[in-house]
Image 1 (tube, helix red, strand yellow):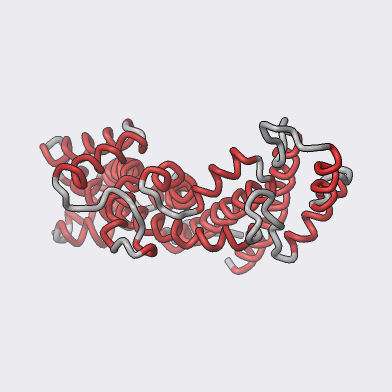
Image 2 (image 1 turned 120 degrees about the vertical axis):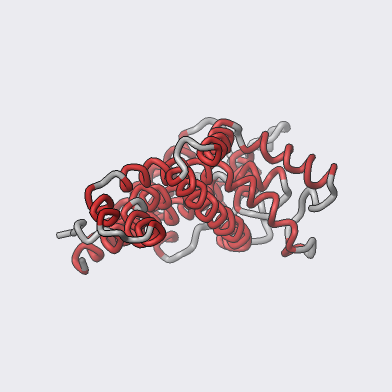
Length: 309
């Protein structure tokens, strides 16, 4: 197990290098540039700006310079935001996205697993049908539809929650609820369906039948044996889901005016801010590979039959 963990950690390095390389060249070969405006700048001014940011050098030289800076932990200057560098903007906004993502994925796990288990235990009853109906809604309806609906119902009609804002700006902790529930909807639906399917398969397995034949209580069978065996599909889903819920928060952050990383990702794309785009991609990629690594390790803890050699 220790050797496998070391190999996986070492394998993260070339993966990130490939991602950074592809991102670097893709954003630079695309038409347009960070200093293109409606009114064309004088040629002398443009040459001076390009020289300042080393954009007049060959692309390979720019790549080598950028990789050297990244290895030192420097994601470079922003071409549009002059006050601070890319590191500042990313790590100033990333905690807000992480808080929103952790709360949303926690809601998804708690309610998704609970709904899936109830649906499996109460198969073909109104509980099963209601849980799966909610799951279908969560999968089918996009976030940019769910968000305004929740705002209209709970903020504008009932007045229970604010329409937008964020608690770090002094708007109160209630501002977390609507965006977190919105972001959790799709993952709640997927986790509920996965849990139901996996739990049904587990409850029909031979060792569960043996436990029932021995007179073991239903609660012990479900929580001690069936639940552990049915968690493998959910764990495999949670790795990319957590990274996806961070990246997927772009729409939610825009709707609810959350000062998260999604705002800079969208604006940097419009502004063609090379370094900020690649910096955000690097952060998302690191989150994804780390979560996939954690999932593989948790696999072996849940199922002793799974070994890594």
